[in-house]
Image (cartoon, rainbow, N blue to C red; front, top):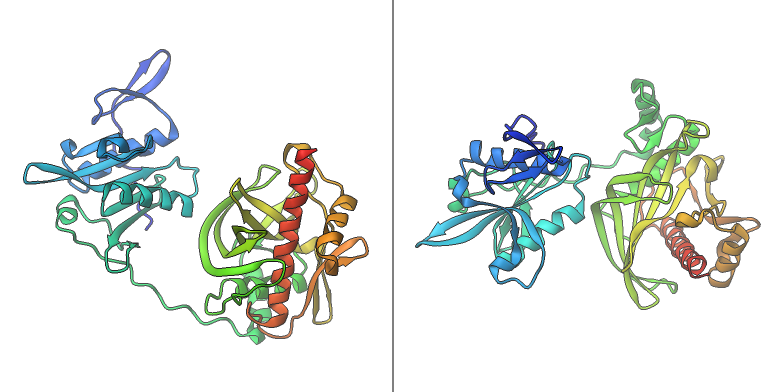
Length: 398
């Protein structure tokens, strides 16, 4: 729901100790101006002016411990209702700075707060995008709404859930090539759809498009089974996530996620395509397959595989290689020979001379992730990403 609250009025600005402050109309005190605070103040105006919430029903930076919750966390904004002289939480709002991507983590944060204090409505907003949810008891879940109910409607429990659209049909394989050529010719940007670069050789771009379409077709699931090296617990479908990489890059958007068990631990591995440019070197934008790893310590891209540099296409045969290049946080680059030894000890089948061979596919049909040859490529990519993180841990411990 793209509700832009940038036009909402801000409170008076005063200077305190050489810094500008808002005079918060709810807390009745001066608050230093930050990007997130600006979003919070615009949201207060939106609640009061658009949703007709009485100022007396709004609490800002409210401690959850005030609701007998054993937590030190605070909710950005809590809106109360009143019944029989007793106040109760109706809505929790989570405000993020304008440059913060509203990923699954941001949504889950406000859902957790709602669960803790029994608020039925939730909003998450970064100033230009606003999502509103209502807890639905029948499904025990928070459902996204078509519009934000006003205060009176919230007190009555009214809501209008977004109707989930049916999954669109995949593009037939026979249409892919002409479609990409049409799109590449139409768009003046250096890339199409922010995931496939127009600088990528066309036969490689076509393979990337087929693979991306397969990843995001949730009608097909990766088989839940023990693959020997890890066990797939659940194909989680599409999640909205955000990750950084060792070079300071930022990647946010839809990922195809898999919940796996690896060496006794339950972890997420997620796939997405993006464009990527090392502007300090060439300025050329490339097509990249990102494989993200969420474990108990951190979330990050375990592998960013440039299709331009690592994909070999001979006729209809597409082979996915990787050079072994690996960044290790602030320690710089790892040694490819050491990584190769790690892989040789754990998964030697992908060793191919000085490169890593992650599998081959015939690009003469529409790929689906439950097809045995496509499944094998995904399994190879997952395990290669896991081994790379094992190697990173090894180097960090030295």
